[in-house]
Image (cartoon, rainbow, N blue to C red; front, side, top):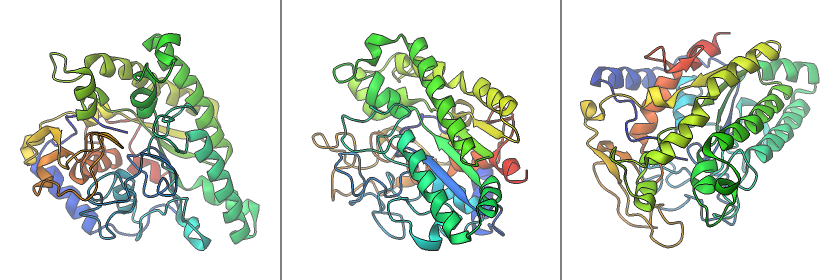
Length: 362
């Protein structure tokens, strides 16, 4: 649900290259793109839910062509930008509204507040956990099979698609580090909790594989102890972030690379890749004018949906100088760089064993 303060902004040249690439996307590289995740990729699935975790009101979407759509940012989210990089003409539609032939190009199942664990995000209200997102994907597959009228063709089709999965942030923000609401911090040490999450995550990713996914990019978690909301709640450590949160999250991240190895070794024709947000979030953001590292751009709510943008308030005008849009979520400029470096790794530590661009070529 959140990413770290030092999202990668290495050089102006890199950003210029990314912008140029987005303007000249070329032909579509894969037939479809399916998105699983939380509010970092939600593009409207929470709009119809009874939940505090929704973003279908101004000033969300102030820089998006369609205005407020349910994206938790000022413009495009990471899934939108990845769709552009993959050569899609349109953004991937949310499961909540995707109908007819729209689903053939992919579906976005992302849901604000969602987690690996079923109870995660219950404090916010309605949300679509990863288990339910997988059930929704099964519905989508059945619909595609009806459209294509041939299960063998559909199975082969799904193997060629790209799948991205980004889960776990809410299992910390809206679960483990809310001891007044959840029992997990009393039942597990941070190390035990990371192990329990990975064990469940492994089963969920194998379920996705059983539904035909063969090209799967798994996002690690960012430095969620650095997001403004968590710093406000727990107070900063000497680093300026909440070190106990970052330390706990790192235990989870450290297990993702071995998980990818295990899945690739165990599952025939599987190509899982790990996107390392710790590496991707290295560098100096001021090199491209990002100077506001710890404050949100919009006026945040202090009551309902605390930490999200207060409705209809005017946000900062210099949005490209901010990393954070609200007290939890990154701005479009931050999403742009995260998505681009996930697509094309600029360090050998960014992606393992390779990046999304290489994944499309398999």
